[in-house]
Image 1 (cartoon, rainbow, N blue to C red):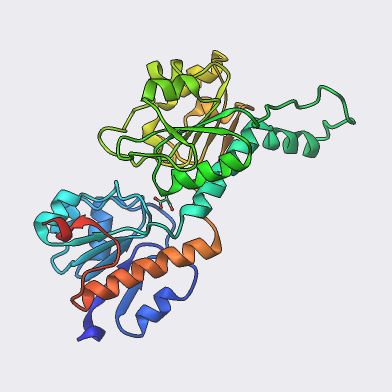
Image 2: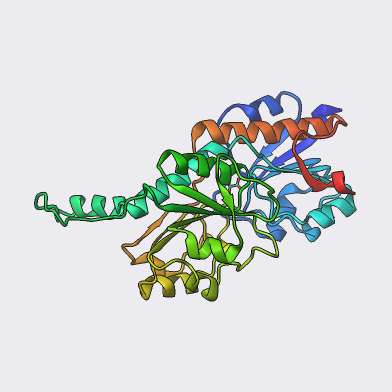
Length: 322
Ligand code: DGY
């Protein structure tokens, strides 16, 4: 029976998890790098019993309706805003994500952006490569120090807490805002959103994309941030209004931004592209060989569980909430 069960994987992954699945199932992997729209995604999944998807795949009700054998959508990401959970629950389809395994890698990358933007690392690299480094000067490429400053975290889940731990090691005070959390670790203090915006020298975003966080940092809230602060986003782009962010940078109200995710990904607001005070990465938070291998292993484990009739290890909804 297993040999006839089919798994549709919408992207190639490092590691040998997919090879191990091939020993027991028919596995189809999409090797093209272009993004799938709903129609193409439905056509690709087709009659498969399991789909292993990426965060850019729009797993809508329509897609699930067109895939009659589908039992599980194993999203190989911790975020799952691309999957219609309510429709999956109605259709009895499990939805799983890949928490924990990417926490440290994503926190590292948030810190890479914090350091890059406050210490002007990318600007300095460009200066050297372009032959504009003519020797040490006391005022050359001055950045901003972090010790004694306040790190603000919008979202204090696994990744937010891992970013906080690094922040404390850099001598920063940590504030956070997360309605789902009662107490902070090691002196980290929960505050209201207004206090977080006004009190943070570096504001780093670690909340999921939901209807209540979409557009949360619009013009007014960006204006309410501490003058001279830095904004870092490794969570989901649509939490920030990019046009308003460009305005806040242009006016000098914010000192810089480090972005790994974009409002209309993979498009980037043109106003961000020319700015020296912005560091831009291509949604690489979890992009280490080790982490990506663990993500696909966990997703594969969830698929095997469901295809064998057991509950998956990391469900986020769908059948589990039906
Ligand atoms: C996620 O997992 O949600 C990241 O955005 C990609 O790893």
